[in-house]
Length: 184
Image (cartoon, rainbow, N blue to C red; front, side):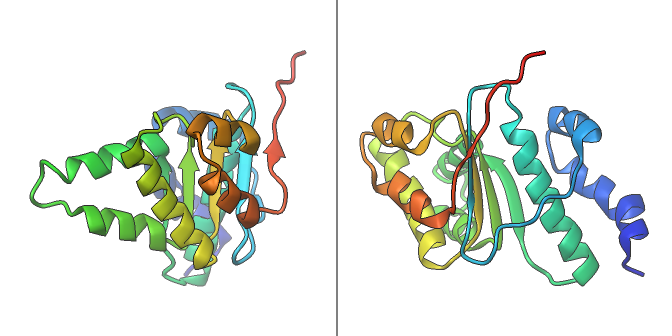
């Protein structure tokens, strides 16, 4: 039976195993359900290192997984760092079992995609072309995306030397989350 208790006892531990150990550890302290982005809306979480952007994004991801479990809706989600996404794309050039188009299509079509450390990649022409392709496809098809970045959208455009990606993201979100370091 799919209920909150079976989610907590059986499914949640499996979802947490999909995340890196550091995120699992931090989530144990801060696991709070967050409302998912509405259809066609996304979240852009930005701020300095150490402010909890990744944990906040992981909470969105876990809530999506919880709802998928409870509703048995078959939706597909991914939580991945942007540099890791580009490693997957690069592997397609040397691994005949991997297909670049499949990777691009897969991340473009997911029902929810969490892209952690967005903007951490060096903005080469190849990176920018693939980033634009994924972000634009998600934008055009109203696919919710959660981005985390050390850059606000204006800084991101400067970092990339092009505002096409940041412009799409800006149209995908209501307002960016700006996280500030809280010192005690």
